[in-house]
Image (spheres, rainbow, N blue to C red):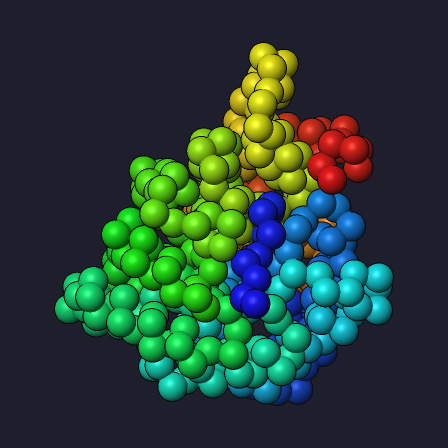
Length: 329
């Protein structure tokens, strides 16, 4: 029986690379040990699962062997740390059906439970909604893993998967959810509340933590959120409060406070993307380096930029430090 992912906060983790000085290859080598250590840190602090090799994970900048080694390494590392069967989605970022299936076959062998499949967007507006639906059906028919639809218009020439598309694709037995990385909250709510969709089998996640409260209160399954790579307790506490079936005025007040704290920090994530996330992870948690991603993303924040966000960091760090396991688990 095909199983959908659990509700909660997933993290689209950045891929950690070793310092250039430690690598003899053309590009800095993948640092699997740091990847495992950061993954265990997230698992211990309320995060429900990981997305490896999504957009934030720079899968498109990595070789097939590197992708396999990273997923299999993290799976073994989590198992060894006492987190057997910890939820892992792995992302595919290519347009070819055959190559997408090749990635999914590799991820199955490496130990991932689900594939997060980016909408094919090379031809942008030339791709019809019918063509997008058929593409997903062909992939899902043959995928060895249950798949989720990944709609990120910012990297797919503005291809948009519509609520009608989700309704149709949710009926496929091997399609178990979606990630919407765009700001159309109405689409999240329409799909999460659609009475023609079996929501125990098809889970709706946002890629934006600034939408967490509004969408989870209206039955979304959770978020796949980059800020949680840095401040997992805060994001997971907001998730825990928002998914309650009932809450009093005090709980609603806390949700509002946490959502404001999360949303102001998400502005940084939105502005600086992968490079900003990696620098923040290093500064706050100690994992990784300050050298950014692989070309063309290599680099760090402009001088003095981190300090400009001091009010935001002080607010969320104070919140993070105040939370206990009872708050976020």
